[in-house]
Length: 310
Image 1 (cartoon, rainbow, N blue to C red):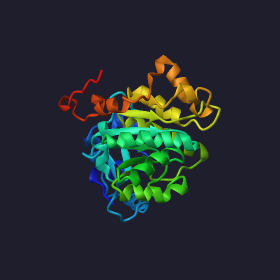
Image 2: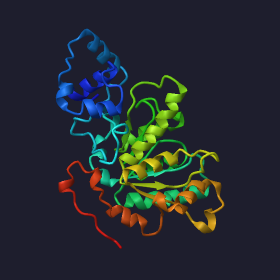
Image 3: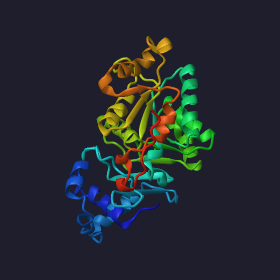
Image 4: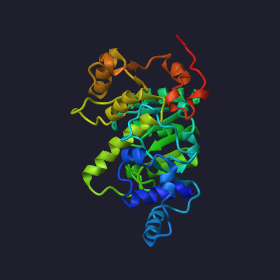
C-alpha cells in the first residue's frame, strides 16, 4: 500500500475526530503546517494507524493520497468547501487524475434496453477513440456498459465507488473492477470504512455522483428516468456538473425518445434552457475533445487554450 507521511497524518487526524468534515479541513487545515504539527508517537495514534492499515491489502497498486500530495487531482475552483475531497483511496493508476481535461463522465440508468446499450457503446467508442478517458460509477446498467467497453478494447477507465476500495458494490461487478485495474484503469473512493447506517450508505452514492462530475471536463447522460419514475441517480451528477461549470450533454433523439420514460430526465434537461444541457450530436464528441477547462488545471497559467470549432 502506498501513502505519504502527510497523507497518513491527515488520515489519523480524521480518525481521531480532529477533522470532521470536508469544509472544516479546507477552512482550518488547508495549510500543510497545521497537519505537520500532529505527532504520530502517541499510543492512541499508533493503534489508529494499525486499524486503518488493516483495511487494505499488501498490493502495490493500492494506496491513499491527501490534498498535500503531488498526485492529488486539481479541484475545480467552483467547488464549494463542503464538496471538496481531501483524502482519496485508490487501486490502480492514480496518474489518471493528473489531467482531468482528458476525462469524460458517462452516466445513466441501471436498466437500459438493448437498443440504449447499442447507442451507448457507439458513444463510448467515439469518446475513447478520441483519446478520452471514461469516468463512471461502476453501477449496473450504463456505468457497467461504459467500463466494460473500455476493458474489452484495452482502454483505461476510472470507476468512482461509494464503498471501500475492496468491497465492490454491486457484487456482480467484482470481476469488472479487477479487470479495470488490470487494464491500467483506476478505482477511486473517499471511504475506507463501511457505512454505519442505511441513510449514510445512500448518501455515499449521491456523494460519489458529484466526484464523477468533479473529475471530468464533460458529463454525458445516456438515459435516465425522471425523479419518481425510476432510478434517477444520474440527476445528482448533472446537478453537480451544473454547479461546477462542467459541459453537459444528453443522448436524445426526439423522433424515438420523446415519449420514452427511460429518457424522461434527458428530455426535461434539454427542454430547460437554464439547465445548459446540450443534445449529443454528431459533432459533439469532436468538440468535447477540444475542451480545456482552466478550472481543472493545477496551474491555470500554463494551461493551453481551447480550440474553437464553431
